[in-house]
Amino acid sequence: MKHERLCAIAHNFADSMASGLGFVVGYCPTDVFEEAATSPGGVIEIDFLSGSIIGGRPSHQLKGAAAIFGQAFPIFCKKNGAEATDFQSFLAAFDAKGGRRRAMLTVVDRNGRRSCTEYDGVPLKRLRVLDTLGRIRRKARQIEKAGQ
Image (cartoon, rainbow, N blue to C red; front, side, top):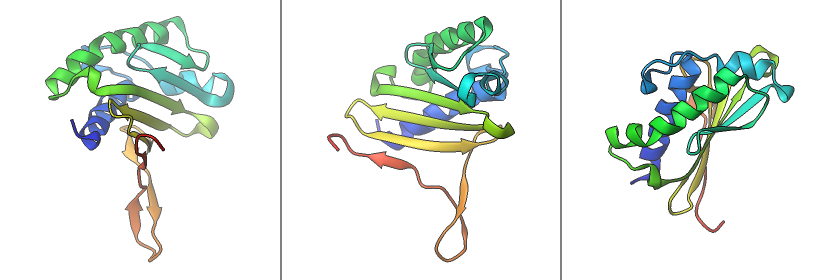
C-alpha cells in the first residue's frame, strides 16, 4: 500500500473524531478539542492502533471513544482497500492551545516510512503557507524514509 494512501486513510479517520460526530464508528459524540483545551499543555494525543490516549488528561468518555475508534480502525482500513497491518504507527495529536483547533497526524507504514502532516480547523484541512513567489500553497508533509 502506498504511503500517501495510508496518510489519506489516517486523515479521514482522525477527521471523524475531530468533527465530534465519529461517523466512521457509527455515531460517537466527542469534543476532542475541548478536552485538549482543558488538558495540561493544550494537547490530547491518541494512538489509533491501540485505541488509547497516550498524552493529555482525557475524560472517561474520551478514553472510551478512543477505544471504540481503535476497535473500528481495522474495519475502516478494509473498507478503504488497506489493512491495519499496513500501519506500523498512527498517532494523532489534537492541539487546542490559544483557542485554535489543529491536529498533527503521524503515520509510519510497515516499511518504516514516516510522515507528519499538520491540519487546521474542523473539518481537518492542510495548513496553507506562502511559497517563495508569494503564492498560497498547502504546507508540505514532512516525510522520512526508513532508516533515516
